[in-house]
Length: 85
Image 1 (tube, helix red, strand yellow):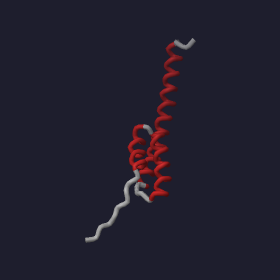
Image 2 (spheres, helix red, strand yellow):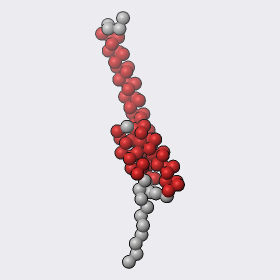
Image 3 (cartoon, rainbow, N blue to C red):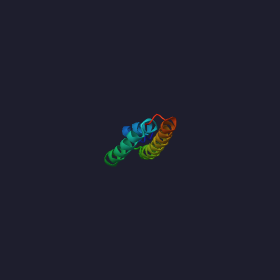
Image 4 (cartoon, rainbow, N blue to C red):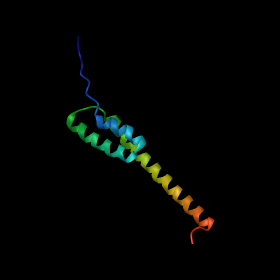
């Protein structure tokens, strides 16, 4: 019987992938750290780390765009209602 050892999946890559959906910046950081760890340890999970970084970047851009649009709408509503000065 032949047994093949499958390399362990890097924990930071998995956690970074999950975190990138909730807190994108954390996903980016953990994805980058996981890639550095995998270079040394030889663990698997490069795809998860790459996806964590990509989803984290896209999520961060989406959150920034959402905040800018929200801020513009908020300031527009405040100035039209006559509350500001």
